Structure formats: C-alpha cells, structure tokens
Length: 229
Length: 222
Image (cartoon, rainbow over all chains, first blue to last red; front, side, top):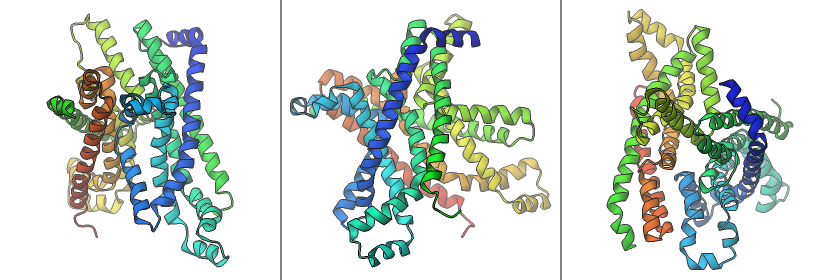
C-alpha cells in the first residue's frame, strides 16, 4: 500500500507540485486580500453610523451564513445569467475559474476576519483610545496609529486560525475545474479508479497545515513581541 | 421568477434531503465524537494515541477531500470485496463522511469539556453512592454538555453548510436540485440565490434552538 503511494508520488510528482503551488497562491492571495478588505469592514462594524454598521453586519451574515460552494457557484455560474455582467469589465474576473475562486475565497475570509478584528477593536483598552485622542489625533489618525495595530495584535490568534482554515476551504476551487491540489488528485483518482491519489493529497494537506500553523504561531509572536507576557 | 416557482417543489424536496442529511450526520457525529473523546481520555496509551493522531490528521485535511476519500474509498472497497453486491447511496456515503468529520472536530471539544468537570462534583457523586455509569450519565455528561454547547453550535453550522459538498458526489440535495433547475431554465443566479437564502434561513432558525438548549443546560448555574 505504501509502495502504491510512493509510486504515485514519483510518477506524478510534478503535477502534484503544480497543484500545491496553485493551492498556495489561492491561500496567500485570498488571505491577504481578505485581510485588507476586513479592516474597513471591521471599522464599519463598530461605527456609530447605524447604516454603515448594519451594512457591514449584513455582509458578514451573508458570507458566514451560506456555504462557500454556493458562493462560488453564484459568482462563477450565477452572474453569467446577466448580459450586462458579461459585457462589463467584471467579466474579466468572473469568466476565469481561478480568478472566480480567488474572488469567492477572498470575499468569504474577509467576512470571518472582519468579525475577529471587530472583537479585537472592542478589546483595545479604553485608556489607549483616550491617549490617542489626548495626543490630538482625529478619529482616522487614532484608528491608523493606535486602535487598528492593537486590534490586529489582539485578534492575531483568531486571524491565524482563519488562514489555516482557508487552506482547507481552497479545496473547493476544484469543483469549478481549478487544478489545485485537490483538483489534481481528483483527476488522477478518476483516471485510475483508485483512492490513492486522494489519500496522498490528504497527507500533503496535513503537512502543509502543520507548517502553516507553525508559521502563523511565529507571526503571532512577532506581532505581539512588545507585549509583556 | 416563474421558473423558480415551477421548481419550488423540487427545491423543497432537496431542502428536506439537506436537513435529513445534516440531522442524521449530527446524531452519528455526536455519538462518534463522544466515543472518540472517551478514547482520547483513556488511561490506555494504545487507545489514546491512535485516536488522537487520527483526529489531528483528519482536522488537517479539507472537508471536501475527506468526503471524496471516504465516499469513493468505501465504494471501491465494497466493489473490490463484495463484487458490487452492495452499493452505497450518496446519502449513506454522505452521512458516513460528515459524521467522521463532525466527530474529528467535536471529540476535541468534548475532551476539553470533560476535563473541565470539577473533581469535587465527581467526588460528591461518588459520596452519594453513584456507580460509574450513573456518575457518567448524571454528573459528567450534563456538566460537559453545558461547556461544549457553544462550540457545538458552531460545528452544527459548519456541518449544515458542509452538506452542500455532498451534492458533488451526486446526492439530490437542495444544491443539486438548484443546479438542475439552473441548467434547464438558464437562470443560474435566481436558483443559486434562492438556495443561499434557504441556507441562511436554516442557520438562522437553528440559533434560537441552541439558545434554548443552552438555557436548559445552564439550569442551576448563575
């Protein structure tokens, strides 16, 4: 059995590495984009402006309350229903499976990260917010220099977990024909009528998850290194 | 929109399959998760280490891949050893895979919850002359259940959303029915948006349910 797995890895190693590369691209780009999108969403979430806060809350509820697969289908298949979308520049993103999966993963993780960051913002000690105001910072300045950096530090463990989960979520890109690691494994599995390629891919995911958890923990410590323990 | 109305019955039937799949997997997932938590806390290293390793490995693999592995793995295994005499339905395969996923995650929650149960509570039970089974049923389980409930709520929400993945292996759940409708009517957006709305409603409806469960589990606590 082990021999089968090793044989498969030697025979199709290159395809697996290509798949892993696309998986990592999906993971890194969507995590980064999602984080950048989550920052304004989290600020809107705690905004005194009711409409803004409600819109941000609606966004989070929508993306956290529906399956990622349905979101991917809506973006990839759903929008093609409208002639106007097909004529618009947005079609450049929506017509390509990889771009579409990337967009869905980004929008999805942004909703989860916004909730983590919101908790972080609420967790910033009140004295520090007051100190920022006492220094003469405006609302924008205090967010950029004081509140958000602190909130990111507080939310870091939760944000790290979202990134690790995102690795697993990226497997769904294979459903719309993106040949990331799961997609590659599914293709070989269908060709050979065997489960071995799927199991090999699973073990690779475990290895990447372990490595990623380690990196995330290091990054967390780096962000919070000034904090007394 | 009229097309959607034509398919409403089909979508409703699909929604029932989705709910059935989620509830069945929840039941078996809870039982399997409790058993795995018991194994993880067992004094015997031969029981503790393999189960812990298995649950850690499963939690590092995408849910979708686990479903494919268990569904196709089980079908291939049955085909090889029983010459196709037994075939598993997508529903059964889905329950099988989803319960294992739920157990991998919930066993960790149950393990933590069992460790949270205070020694004093168990000693009080023993002092009342409860035997091991009674101690488990009346003291340990209710107290652990109370600690585990908020996390179980989160995992139930993930489980309900993960049922959509079974449509990929051919189960005629809500999402699969929507795919069929979208294909015939050429209105994919309408169908997928409708399905998204139903998932949203199902998840929203389960929140007060868990609220009530948490309230009853917290009886006697202030």
